[in-house]
Image 1 (tube, rainbow, N blue to C red):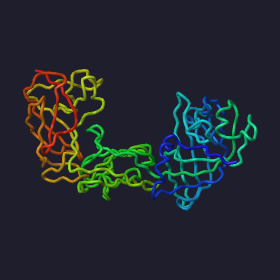
Image 2 (cartoon, rainbow, N blue to C red):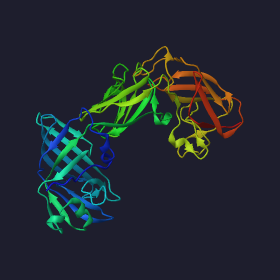
Image 3 (tube, one colour):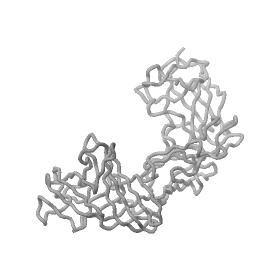
Image 4 (spheres, rainbow, N blue to C red):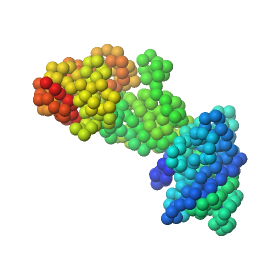
Length: 426
């Protein structure tokens, strides 16, 4: 008997997308350990089982439950290890939940109040050992046996509906860690637009985008003041050119778009030890300007622009508007600092990937208004010591006081699309 018994919850939403090109799937045969599902009951035909996964060992902090099996298809084959990890030394909190009524197709979950992770390692026959933080695998029972049910009822879905019934046996299946891109936007704290610009920052979302839990660049990753194009074994191209990577995780990667990417539809591709993603199309515009406006700065009054005073610490907000954030209202004549991305080229030219080390000037004309009154700009260019971050020093004009003063801007004659406010006192 062979029953499909494991598809991760996020994968269920991807089944209709078709296979990902350029991925390599590991196919594993009968496992060296048994997998046991114990029915917890269910309702409306949808069952739930507790998962006992292979052989478990407590390391003093976590319990690691392991299933191993021979595999083929990646690195000449070898041994696959699938480890379900949870804190403490109690019974397994992992559950198998039927996707639909009566289905043997399940998703993994956790009992309330528990946390856990799934780690897959491929010990290749060549000696390489590659680890993935991924549950993008399925498994089928081989010669399963049931208790509490007749032979005719021995199925994953029926076990989940029958309290204390079990199904147990070795498993086989496939594992695919090919990265899948689901979305790409400009930096979310700067507008989160569906299009990007050369030199701007982009956030890429998906699955299996890295085989590390999370990694952010460090000084050691820079060479001659140039940012890395590989981080945690993840690389990204935009329009066929290498992007500069500052953060990777299985679900999100942040990159700076190369300076000379041609405007128009361009392919974004991620490559990891698990393979190469299907190209994801993103629109590249010559500019895609957005001012810093963190989600935490959106309160009842509206979305505050993330402006600071020259100390770089105190934000222009009503005091206590955002818990834990030093804040004060600005006064007419004060110089405050806006930050942005996607504002386009500067003079002298500073290409993407390079740490900014000199003063520069925006090529495209920029105007900023407070409640319709134009402000004087003391500086408008890339911020020193950063990459792809624009700094705009603004002299607050003489406008009526208020905690919801509209802030607007225009770049090269085109109005910005964000709806922003700031706090002004007299």
